[in-house]
Every structure is written in C-alpha cells, then in structure tokens.
Length: 564
Image (cartoon, rainbow, N blue to C red; front, side):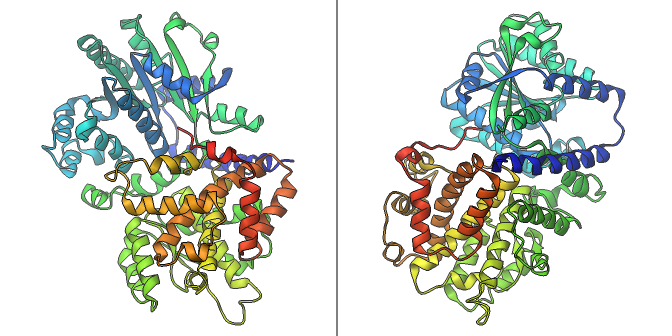
C-alpha cells in the first residue's frame, strides 16, 4: 500500500466519527432542511471531471452571477471567496458582493461601515450579530476589510431574510435580479450557505426571472466528491460537474458548476463541533469580548482531548512507537486567554536572545513551546495548529530522549542557543519540517509558499511585505539554491531570523518530501521519514542529503502554491 492510501484510510476513520458527531449536535432536522440535504447528497454523486484551476477563473470572467458556497463555521470557504474577489479586482472587473450573513433590512449599516462611519463594534451591534448570525466574525472580517480598502472598494449587499429555506431563496433571488436589472454591466458574486447554491434552489430562481444570464456555481468540499477522489488517490483539486447529469434543466448552455476541494470534509465537521461546544451553548456570549479577542475560537474543556487525539493519530500513522506514553501525554495547552500568564513565564527566561525570540513569537501570533516546560501556546486552536504543536511536542521529546542528552538534561530551547550557528539553524529547521509534515498528515490540503511564491514575495512593495521579511526570504533562497556556509550566513542575525528562515525553508522541504513519499510504498516511506526526521537531530550531512534528494533537478524552481 502506498503512503497516500494509508493516510486516506486514517482520514476516512476521522471523517466518519466527526460527521456523526456533528450530525448529533445538529439534532433532528426540519422537513424543509431534510429536503435540501437530500438534494445536496444527490447532487454530490454526479459525474465530474478534474479541471485546471485556470478554467474556473475563466468561467468567473464569462459569468454575470457567481454563486459561491459557504459552510458557516469553516473559514477556508471564506478564504477561497477572498481569492475569487482578488481575481476580479486584478482583472479590474466591476462587481458587487451579495452575502447571506447580513439581513437585507440592515443594508444602511453595511454601507455606513464600508464608508467608515461606523466602527467594527458599532456595526456588529447595529446588525445584532450575536443573535442574527453568530458564526465566527473573524472568518468574514477579511472580506469587509478588502471591500473597505480604498483601491479595492466594492459594494456589499445583504441577502438574509426570515422564513423557510425556500422562502429565503425566493427573497434572495429577487434582490439579485433587481441589482442585475439596475446594473446589467456589473457582476454579482453571491456568498451564501452551501444548500442555497444547489442548482435547483437559488440559482434556478434567478434564472427563471432572467433566463439569458450566464451563471457559475462554485460548491466547496463536497463529501461525495471527496470520497470519489479518495478512491482514486487524488485530493486538493477543482472539479467540474457534467451538466448532462442535471435533471429538469432547461438552461444547460448558460450555467456551469464546479467544486473546489481544498480540505478533507471532516475538517469542516470539526469546525461545527467546536462552534457548538463553545458558542451556541453560551448564554453569556458577549459581542464586546468577541471583538476584543478578534473572533478567535476558544475551545472548552475538551481541548486537551482534541490535541491528544491528533497527536495519537500522527504517532500511529508514522509508527512512532518509541516515544514513552507518559511523555506523550505530559503537556499543558494555553491560548490567548492565558496570554498574561504566558508572557510572565517568557519574561523569566534568563537568556536575553531567547527572551527576544519569545516576545517576537507572541507578537506574531505563532505557536510555541515554553522554556524548559511541556507547556504549549497558540493564539487560538484549530486542527492545523493542533497538528503543528504536536510536531513541536514530538521534536521536543526527540531532543530530550536522545541518548547523548539524557545525562545532561538538554531541552529543545537549548538547541536554539547553540554556539555553533549551523547546529542552531538545523534545530529550528528540523522543528519546522516535523511540525509542517505533521499538519500534512492530518490535512494534506495544507499549503505553504513554494519556490515561485518566495520569489514573488520579494517583488511585493514594502507596504505589503516588510524589508525584514524580504531579508528572511533572501536568506532562504541562498540556502535553497546554494550549499552555503550556514555558520557564516547567520553571523550577526537574531534568533528571529533563524526561526523565520527555517519556517520558509523547512515548510518548503517538508511539502516536497510529503509529495515524494505519497507515491511510494507506505512501509518504506514510514521507515525513511522516521530515520530522517524522528530518530536524531539533523546534522549538516543529513541536511545536504535532504537537499540533494528534494532538489535533485531544477523542477523545484517551477513550484508554486495552489490557488485554492
């Protein structure tokens, strides 16, 4: 069995358990909702083709209306919308964005907020966000920030209303139609719940009123599509449904349906579980506190269990059976609600360079391990952050359990202040590689900057990408393209530079390694990964071996992060 097949088997088990748990939290559905869910399942089983990402952008350019599906607790859907809007901005297309999260009756508050006549808090209070919507505001904030940008300004209109799903579809269709008639030259991007974008629901209602328009429907992370792709050992892709499979369709020539598959579906169900556990049952939910904390997810009493579950899955998948069980479960977790406590611990560190590093990591919102303690901090928790922290925990145990270190009690942080700058960088590098690889085990759709992204970041204006971060990227390119003297390269650089450069290079190498392992035998892959990453601290010889393995030819210079 191949490595990728084994990882998919792991995901199937997690998928089944999280989907079941999410359904239990939803409880019994209304007949109206059951009907829509049945249609969605039927829709997802249709035949499809895998297509290049460029096709979906071409379809967007050719359409009058673009429907984009939202899964309200899952931020990835909003980020894909953000990418679509950026594309339209780059093409200098005129468009408006219609969103479900705000009622049509609250349009004046949307307009006032976009014109900076209302603060963020005033806007959310005006639309009674904690009662009318209540899904994580942090997800949607980036869209409003994009709209408020002086150079990117576009209008946002509210679509929501009261009534059944069908009644709300009809109401939203009327709003869309009226905007289309008023401004026929302007595109309308509709961001609304995934059940509403089923062809025979909201899009069909719009087409009945205006049958000559061109429509693109963009679903996201459909369960049935994921399972079909999984059976073919495929993932993170864009698919186009065959229109011939649509029933009762008289508009085959002017609409097209896609699905962006950027995450395993169990991750979106995981987001439902976290939302139910931490927001819906909180009678004291306070919008002021929610905004002050930037809408971050704060998980409740099950946080430790959730982290332990992901840690166990990674350990099982990679067959890391040599780590002591008591050590694996010996940890504490802290989020931004414990920031003062975490800061107080970092301020007690007696090494000034480490103090500066920890202050930098806290300012940047990075996950970290506290000095000489099995305590981990993350601004907020998510599946990816859990997996990343699990990687740091595993690397920390590797350091502590190394035979050469047991008698003198060396900790992970001690490797960061090695006198030898080469060894210092390689410790940061190995931690970054392990941590990112762990996120890929749990979420193969995870993305990082690839070679062309690193190059393109250097071309960005300083207002978008600081001189400091450009310096880190230049150091990273030196390491990737040449067999440089690491000891000399990092002379006079702070630990922050080590950390950032190791992330850029480590994540890039880890992405290449994961892809290489996916297509070979599982048992061989596991043995290789264990030897390279999880057995001992990487030395310069192993580092050069990894470079030769992963950068064997110049194809790495053509790699770029996926659009979705």
